[in-house]
Amino acid sequence: MERTFAMIKPDGVKRGLTAEVLARIIKKGYRIVGLKQMVIPREVAEKHYGEHQGKPFFDGLVEFITSGPVVAIALEGEGVIAGWRKMMGATNPANAEVGTIRGDYATFVGENVTHGSDSPESAERELGLFFKSEELL
Image (cartoon, helix red, strand yellow):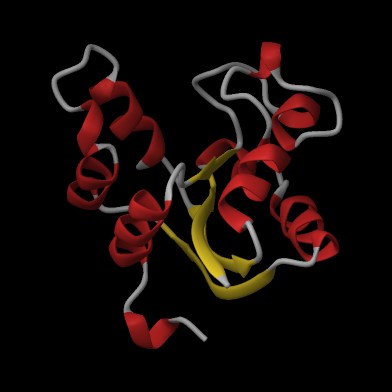
C-alpha cells in the first residue's frame, strides 16, 4: 500500500472545488488517511518548494501557496502516487486532458487547483511537512 501527499491549492479552495476534488478521490477508491484545512506558514512553504529555491519563480510559488487556505490530504492506495498525478492532469492546464481536475477546472499554470507528490521520496517528505504521524490513520 502506497501513500502520497495531495493538496487543494488556494485557488481551488477559494473557488469552492474542495468537495468536487474530494469526491473524485473517494470515487477512485483511494483512502483519505489525513485531511486538514490550513494556511501554510511561509517557512513550511519554502521547505515544500525547496527544490525550486533560487529559481526566478520561487517567490511567486511561495506567495501563492500562502495566500489563502489549502486542504492538505494524505492518500493511501495501490499506485496512488502515479494515479493521483494522472487524475490531476498536466501541470499546465492548457495541456491537461478534459476529465482531469486541471483540465476541467484550472485556469492557468500558476493556479492549477491541485498538487501531488511526484515520487515516493517526495511523498514521504511532503507528508512529514504537513502531517504529524499521529494525525494519519
